[in-house]
Amino acid sequence: MRAVAALALILLGFGNRAPAADDFRTPSPALRVGCRCAEFDRELAEAERIFASREDDVAMPLTPVMHDRFRARVDQAYGRADCLAGCAEVPESRRNRARVLLAETGFKDDSLGAPEWRARLAVVLAATTRCLEIDPNDALCHLWHASSRGMLARGSWNPINLALPYQLMAEFRAARAGAPPGRDHDGNATRGEASMLLKVPRFAGGDPAAGRALIEEAARQPDFSCRVANRLVLAEARGRTGDLAGARAELTATSAAGLPSCSPQRYENAISLEECARCLARLDEVPGVDPGWDQDCRRP
Image 1: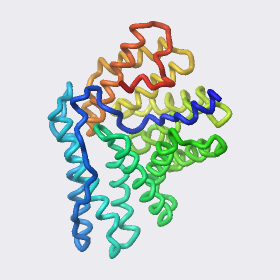
Image 2: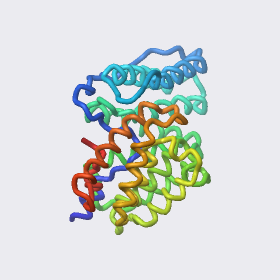
Image 3: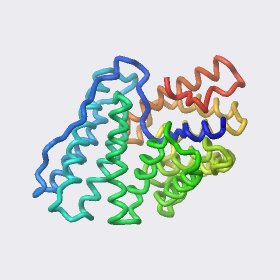
């Protein structure tokens, strides 16, 4: 039963996590923003520009002002993408670009209440399901389809469905589209597959040693450290395979390196650095003891 419970609490480790301070948790109602379907390409480019601007002027430490700006721009891009994905007069293959943006914005869960975030994940799942019906080889749609499906299974996973973890891992591999580990979209697919291997019970396909090997292979990529979330999964992989000293060393190095200058995802990296500090604090407080990977020490 404990193994079944562990599988029901799959934590994939590639989406944003809740901010550390309560004053960052501002309400964010779901948006239905109008769009001009006749100008689809221009409207989509503007939505993508707004989404990219979420990172403007982000520095450490994060402040409520930075968070509110991030949240507002993500919500605006999400609403626009949702509208564009529904433009019935636009060919389905072109609308897949809007579906990908809808999926990426839908995963930015900082400050969202659980019911709202799950509602957005359900929208993402439906959009990416349709995307794969149109193009079964769309790597990004595979990524977000597996991600939303896995996250929605948390807390409601059916223990009879032992095939689910295998299906998700296969889809993360499809999302890499043959690329070496870590060379996929921001390392998201690699992190997803590695986290599944690390957290899922062995009877359902978990293999911590294989998960560690996968993320360590990814760590050889030159841009691996540009995304702090990659380094957090590497530290977790070491910790889950009995190398707590190695986990602590990775967390210490990650914290000392600070906000990477090579990544445009400054806000996401800042959140991950706060998570890194919490994990490191637990290891410092009780050296040699698992800091709580099963409960996810990265969540406050």
